[in-house]
Image (tube, rainbow, N blue to C red; front, side, top):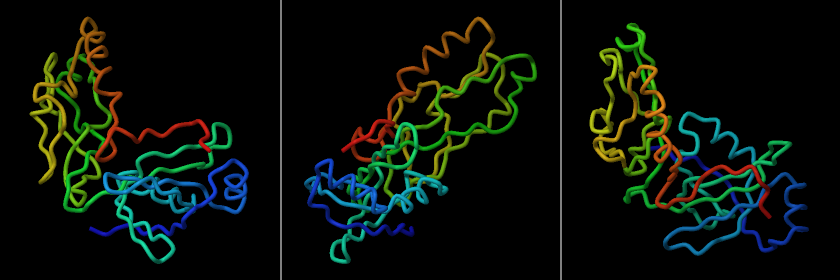
Length: 217
């Protein structure tokens, strides 16, 4: 597994004025933290993070933070913030990980094929667009796919039906519905079912990690 390298620098000043000047210089504030790492204030290039977010693995990319050529931290991008109007990156948080320990991330979930039930007039409902998984960093998949070609009307795909890459476990109950072909009278039920699971996000070994639109100092 190849790590994406990002250069960082320690940041001493955390008040509004120095943070404003930092952004004006082309850098953004960041914080690295972990089970064995107290929160550490850093500065990084937003361009480096934009390149990572636009890559195949996106926020699930394993990053090596090179802090001033002295310290190297293995991290995942746990959260990031955009300006609500300009949409430029304002802040990033990194979670330190160990390559030999499992992490929890959300992975894109893609349905392939045209379901038999759809041909017969049903509607394909995808309950999860991303699946919460647990695995070693080297096993984080780009995405998880499932072929629904043989799925008939009122048939469903459960978490236990998914064929997963080696070393990857989905953190859902085995009978949890992830997709199905429904008729009009059952659509509301499927949408209600989606609500609790679709909101959960766990980019790494904790529950942080949603991108936020509001500015952070």
